[in-house]
Amino acid sequence: SDAPVERGEPMIEFYAAVARKSIKGASGEGWHPEQAVSRKDALRMFTIWPAYAAFQEKDKGSIEVGKLADFTVLSQDIMKIPEMEILETRSEMTVIGGEIIYSR
Image (cartoon, rainbow, N blue to C red):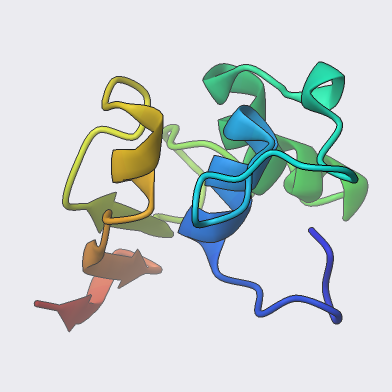
C-alpha cells in the first residue's frame, strides 16, 4: 500500500498491484509494469502476508477452522474478471468474528 499517501481503497490497490496502471488505465512513468504481481500474490498481500508480518497468522489471514471468521464478500470474482472491472467491484458483506457487520 502507499498509505498514508493514497486513499487506502483495497480494490484500487489490488488493481494497481496487478495492472500497474492508474484508475484511468494510464501506465505512464512511475508505474513500472515490470513490478506487476499475479492476482494470487496480490490477494496474499491483503490477507496471509500482513497476518504473518503481524505475528497473527494463527488467527488471521486465511479462512480455516479455528481462525477468526473475518472476511469480505465481493460483488465480483477479482481473480477472474478483466482488470478494469476490478475497480467496479464492491463489498457486498463484511463478517467480523463470525458476525455480519455490513450487508448491502
